[in-house]
Length: 91
Image (cartoon, rainbow, N blue to C red; front, side, top):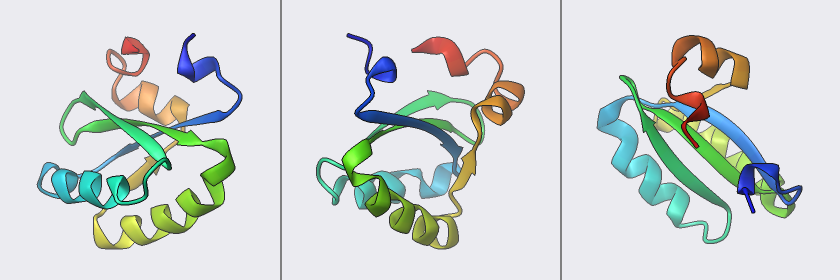
């Protein structure tokens, strides 16, 4: 089964400066079961985030904090496709 088609998963995109990527991943992994991060490439790296629907409220709070502290920028899918046309549909 493709997780992107699973109703229990919310797929979002974002980007973050390379120098903040490792700490961003570490902070997200500290919230076990919240999300899975795929780094698709590009500069700054494009991220595909697969968030557990039942934990989405937790992700919204974390995303707000990470946007400030780690310079994470959430992207709509159409923005990601425009900025990274060859990367969005790799998975």
